[in-house]
Image (cartoon, rainbow over all chains, first blue to last red; front, side, top):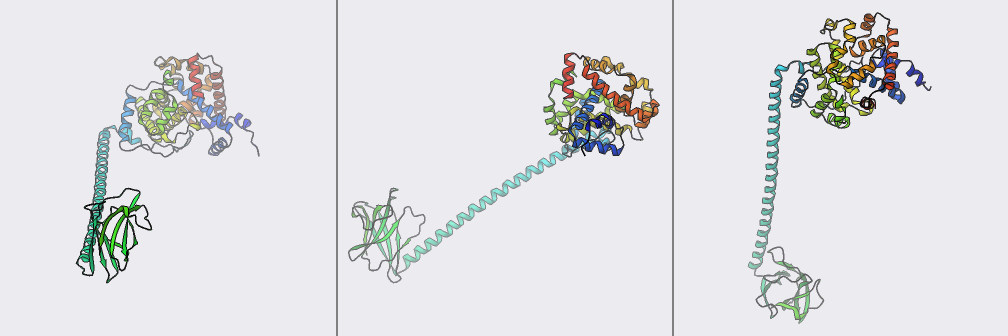
Length: 280
Length: 197
């Protein structure tokens, strides 16, 4: 059924609604129609506006200092009870949803200072709590960081210890032969070393003081077997540990050499770039 | 009322919805006298009116977030909160009806007694409203301005409820016509548009 809104508006029920002169049933009806029909809502707004104007015409100057008094009161309240986000029911005159909730607050100005003081204390306590909480938090974070650093250092030390123990075990092991690779004319004063274990088929390489090559080059290690070079792989410098580098075992090596090759290595050594060399 | 253009309601509404105390300062500056007048008309006591005005402002401040600009003008909402605060008060048993037991003649038609304190705009608006027939003004004044109940109104005016209702209807329609047709000076018209829009 389509409602005749103009007839409804003309009936005068909206004026009576705004002034609270309707029954509860009529009140519900008007509220429901106002939601359904924009023209009814518009009419209600227009009526309220006219009554607003009517009220405005009866304006009365506020007593002196009332505004200051109200603002001071709200200032005091704001330190204890901030405004709620609860929606205030839109109420017509007969609505009893807008009961004064805090009438005592304003009637009793005498304990306003106490509330203010309590509010201030509460505020300061909260502030202090927040401050110390944050400080504790920062300290905790700091401590966690320090612990992690210590742990990392401990791990690094453990690693170094293991490497040194390993080196020591190689050096002390009679099965390893120590072969010193000496710098050629190309690299005078440079040393490297090979630890060669024919009993257990193991070889370790110690880079000692070999200089860091340019980015496009890599050192390549060779074993010389029956006068011919055998590739033992390329390695990067600096080596990120103090440990000897385990390299492939080549049986019957008569000598070891390191040449500087293009990155990735070459199938045969470039003798022009022979850096260190040592006979077994 | 000349203060109305000082602050746009939009800014005021933003402050209000944020729970900013500054909103109350602006509301008091812009609408304080009108809101206070509406309370005073109901309770007829400066002491009580001051208390209620403070209660109402606290409610406005606390519930500012619930104001919905799409549902009507800010002033209408403020007025509703203020009027409900005052109505709650005068409906309590404690509130002595005698406190406002002056005759209708005194209460309804003595607005001019403080008109010299009011700004010229209000007087201009009053003159327009003054053209409304007295029997229509009486119902609006008693029910809307002074918060009389239906029964109190019928008793006071000694007319049946049906007559009260029809007079209310006519009173508001007359008012709308008067306000629309009146030859307000430009500044009144501006305020009127501002209020109605």
